[in-house]
Length: 140
Image (cartoon, rainbow, N blue to C red; front, side):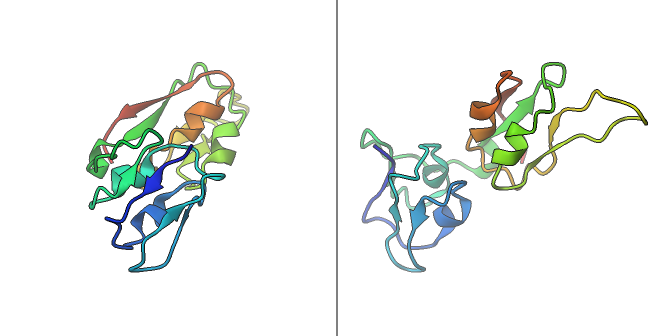
């Protein structure tokens, strides 16, 4: 199952713009739909919807959440191997591998470079093979 957009949708396109996997389809001022084959059930569409027109896979309406209260990735630098899995999978370009502190420094790690680009989908946390990322509510 995936998330579902109800008839409350006014077609503002915010969910479509924010979806990290391009699962939301539709045109301006028309009811949107979620492609269930693409949906990763991250909930971004529901958190962003001021009309509360999104239901989760259990049919429960997802409440809108102010963006400042969305979860953001917190990277544990000591656990991170800089494998770049999180960076490659972040479709919003909110993460990067840090620059070395000095020439020859091999202690680099993933870092959130633009919290305003981050939609809090948690894909980075999911793909991290070392569990060096966890999601927490943070400043936008």
